Image (cartoon, rainbow, N blue to C red; front, top):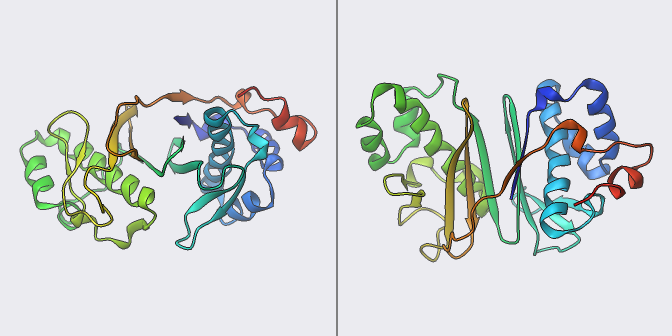
Length: 245
């Protein structure tokens, strides 16, 4: 499942309340950021607790997080190794995916005219560039963001970040749901990942990568979260303990 939120809907007072719900590891992570990025980080960690709580029917306050040897945030307890999550944020959107198998998520603000021809040539596979060249000019920018988000979601899912050259990871968007082309780094067995490319708003693209054996039979459950859905009473146990999952 994927939870979405608009960070601009969270007032400074609400963010201060949310910050108080975070544990020490959460706070160490979020304090690395300033300004808008910190707002996104705080909302993202709260969404992670909500998403995991909903997906696994556990209290959102019960989750403890850490990082793996590659620096990827992971669940430490409960359900270590069985519960997975991934957070992404950009201008105007914060998202978190929760699943019972490795998952990667990326969101991009596709309204930004930032992907130049030179950048596209550096990060897109030859077949992707050829496919994009056949599109009308107004559609090419959004297609580039869709492809970039899929690459980000995949490398986050396999836990290598952008250590692999992006142009070596190619996607076919021609037939239904995106398909990862053979030979991409980290694929191991073919067809072990399923992918979704969605547009949650007019100015955002979202990509989800799920290691489900390539089944892809489950639809993506997406929910928007408003500030009032995240409780903030006086004590941490009350904050999360009173939340229905």
